Image: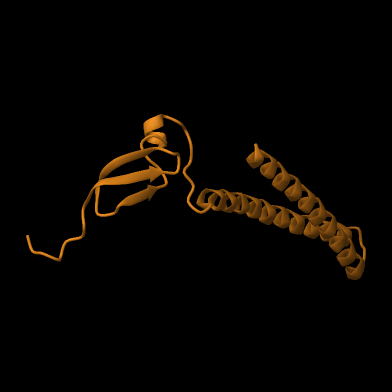
Length: 133
């Protein structure tokens, strides 16, 4: 074995886990700190838990929720535009002039969007309550 090229070996290196478990092993470091060990890892304990690194799980859940809320909002806006067009056609069929028909259609659109917004807000609040539990 060549001299001077190998790191110093510590035969009694101490390993410390954040759960408080400690043990001795051989290593090139005198003290090793770890986030998870066999005493606290879900695979070994049988406990169902998510080991979260820097909030990745929360970000993923928020992304899924946002995607669902955005899809619902897009659908509601599409329904609102359809309601606007239907209101405009009805006004024209009643014989109202184009300006009145457009005003009635805009009013129908505004009402549909307000309804959609309140529905989406209620869904978001329901999702937030569910994730808090």
